[in-house]
Image (cartoon, rainbow, N blue to C red; front, side, top):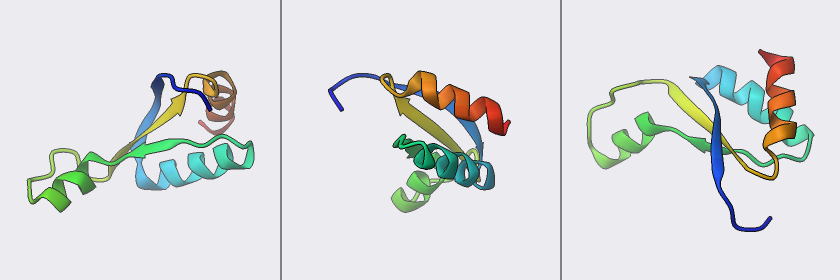
Amino acid sequence: MSKGKYHLIFTGSSVEILSLVDALEKKGIQPVIKDQGESARLAGFGVTTPLQQQVFLHEEELDEGKKVLALLF
């Protein structure tokens, strides 16, 4: 994959994220998961949005990823 931008496609609970990541990986798409709550916990800060995670996709995989997202949610 070449250098490029990543785009947020979904924000939700860890359970929803697990389902989405599984579906994306079955299509050969490698998502990036951002968990601000876990990052804050590891750094010793308070958590503002517990259990919320974000899924980002590389711009080359964005169109296919949106199709997978539409099928799930």
